[in-house]
Image 1 (tube, rainbow, N blue to C red):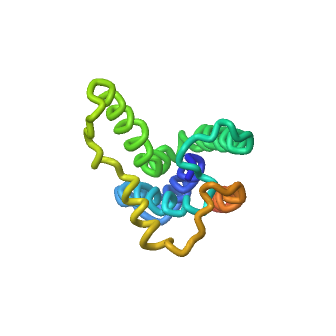
Image 2 (cartoon, rainbow, N blue to C red):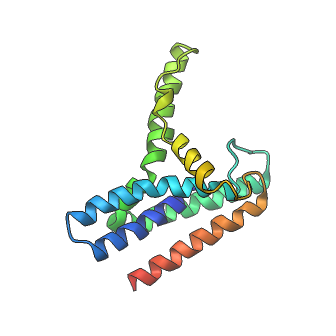
Length: 167
């Protein structure tokens, strides 16, 4: 799923942990649940318009990703000061896989095109396993534009839940 979905999930988790648990448990469980939430959220990405490769020639794909990018930046800007812990741990797997490991791997491949450096270090195969075990019955909408509806629904529900919790 997209960063905004992970951001909002991390915010919800941190709000609930800090509301119902005392320190240090509130911190520990925020980190644990936010980290684990990434696997669940990414496992559900099967029902969203989430093509594995960029489709820059498709105007719909470009517009959708501009909207998602803006909402990701907006959610980051609104919640980062108070809910940085939940957001960080909800996005930690993407930071590790896409920012750290992928960039190091690309650098190593420039020097040695056969390099398989740290190919086993990715976390996303775990999300794939969760998807295959728990959500095998869901339709695959990754290439279908109608797949934006489940993500819009989830983002809306998380947003309303956050508003409800903060009131």
